[in-house]
Image 1 (cartoon, rainbow, N blue to C red):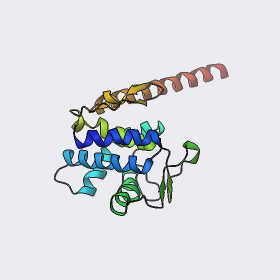
Image 2: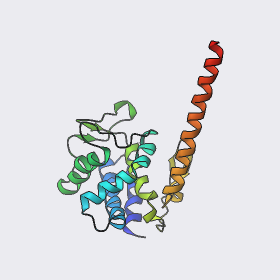
Image 3: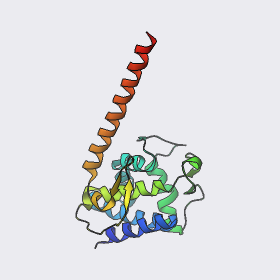
Image 4: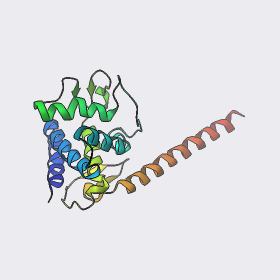
Length: 192
């Protein structure tokens, strides 16, 4: 079992227990180690943020079931906000910035000057690390399932599965677009 395995197993347990600060610490350690594998010549901040840019679609989709890739909120993209408000403060100061919290569900979601994210955002970050191709050899049994568009997927099956996840996301969004097009066509035919 590698450090990435152990940290993500701990993060999954901590998310389930509602210990979001410890879950985030473990996830950030796993993301740091994964980023080091992918971008060994970049500095810590550059490689961490670049990995999150690479995996941003997965984070948003698992956290909120939407795509918000590259969007800035009060001047910060999601990777920049995670680095500035969560990862750095917790690693260097032992706590999150006062500008970020993980409280409540979607009804309390806010991004911008202050970021209040549901715990599913941590699941999205964990999935970004688990699914990274560099982690395909990880073997730790995570013994849980992640909800993936109303399907429970064993977390164990997601190690290094970034391409499978992206293909599934494309299929899901294609089917949604087809349903919308059919509904619009049906509405138009009823107007005539």
